[in-house]
Length: 427
Image 1 (cartoon, rainbow, N blue to C red):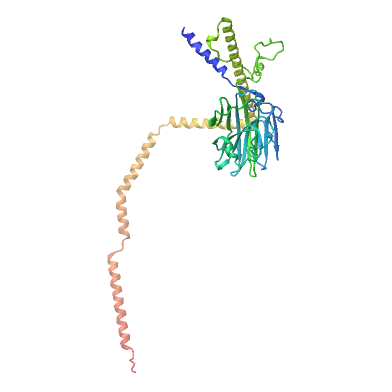
Image 2 (cartoon, rainbow, N blue to C red):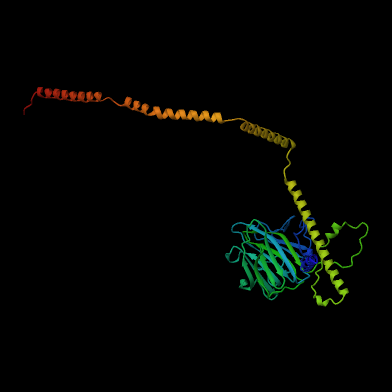
């Protein structure tokens, strides 16, 4: 009874997870798999265009606007529309440039692709949503949301900032890492940056059948806008799987390759009230559908783990390929030197541990005591002798004083005699 009580909540938890899961729409997404482009020349499901430069498509990112030159524009637009009105878009980008660099990045969800490479400042009329990231108002960065039903001319509007229905400050330039922007059209519109809510409104509900687009524009001092990932997920699978699948034939691909084809599974099974299930047949059908949905969910998880494993293997190969080739002679020489150092350290350790240094320490202490005793015993007498030997004698000093006095008296007597013996002059 206790095991049954534990299994039943766990089963309902799995069913709820399968029913509320979001499924990636591969035709509208890129950057969530091993590489962006299979051939390096085109982005599947998207169209690229640019002005004053060519949009660069690399293995892990798209450069909409380069660091140089300025006055450049770049844009990418999806080739297909969003099939459901319940969707979430996750966008990763990076902006870098000079200290005084400027530019703007725009994310569009419009009925037509007539926007081209325009920004919200140069576009005229459009029908849909526009999110712009720029340095408006000298705030260091701001995210703003605009809506248009095709009647407003944004380019000719005298006060464009008054049309924003939501905004928040976000310093996106020169962060050294990708920034994350998340747009959720579920029970209203929610915009988040770096997993922090930017703004939310329940008065906006975007319809299905619109195109996604990303544009960037720079000024004379440009910013480089790079896109790493754009993933659109929905509560409805893009390619629903039928319940009755054909039997496997000979020569069919192994199960691992089949599971890689599950990006559109599983189907979301809606919740049902227990009172609606009246008979055993309805109960079996409901249980069958939910078990199959859970099976698809596990298959999708298996495919994601397989994709993650391939990414890890590829990254390992890239890291190993980037490492410089070290000659075997260098490795062997380094190994020999390391062994020699280990032997020397072991020998020193044995010498230190095997010898008794107490006798040397005692002899050194005895020598220090002898030096200390000699200094304290003989130093005062030696200093006294030196002072007395260098002191002048008192008798010599008295003799010098008397001799000087006698010389002065003799000189005075001689002076008097010469003065008296000189002839006198009279006028």
